[in-house]
Length: 432
Image (cartoon, rainbow, N blue to C red; front, side, top):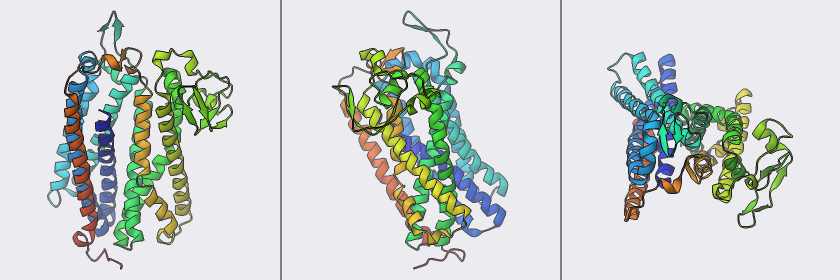
């Protein structure tokens, strides 16, 4: 399940965000009649189609895995948090229909209706992501039922969907998707600019992706603050694992880095920022932050992996925010981007960083919740399938995901290499 989600989260985030890049480029073509924007829209639409197909395959496999691996969980939880999943299916069908209209509507539909169908692809894709995150948020903050004598009574699907964690998780996830995808796309086009290939085409593409990426990166710390305060209130064990806080502190220091020794319950080599954790968790520099010493031992999450994943996420997020500030300063000063090769190289280096942070954030969310699959209600060990031969399905699913990754990489590489051939008109001149 972890491997499947690790692959799917990348496919789905690109599928959520790329349609908005496409829609902006399409809008600019309609307003300026600049053929470069039209060609860019067509190029990006092919990428959207590729990731829609791979996201559909990987998402379908995940739905099978829910039934295959977690029947006890689905038996009880399915009727409660099934609404966001059913609505996500509706959003997926709307996205598929709108994408069909967009891909085959060139020169057949009204130009503004055609653009609108592209926007529908983006909005419905984003809605799909938010609805799935709402289901995951329910696992972190169960709501919409009464748990009495092992039974789930008085089910309220609306309350379950709009649980206390859904907003903070959805906001954080959406900004992460825009940041990661924006930097990846901008980085690829920056690389093409550095290679002097179709500069006008790639420069316009870079600017659209970079603006989305940099806005997302600068807003992400605010979203992270909302999430941290929410986790501190609802899941103190997760916060303690994130910060490797073995002992309750008042006030509590924020740790940067450090090597965790789970056996001795110590952290060595960390940089301490006094009182910072108290403020980040509770908005008060003198507040007490609960450590793992006040939580039963059998409810402790794996501390080392949660702490390291959290450090990776925050470290990369900080770096991307700094790159974003530099980019906007350059934009305000109206310096030609092609003269700032070092800045373009920063974007190239950032291509994988957003997705590394995305994966690390997912690890924090999922591993930090352990040993619970439904926080405080059902343990993970009670929801798993005691099924012989389960390893063979793991090998099959892993082979499918790795094959998908290879195919997607090849298709995207071919798309980039074909830009000079497919879109080499008068408005795009290849510079050698």
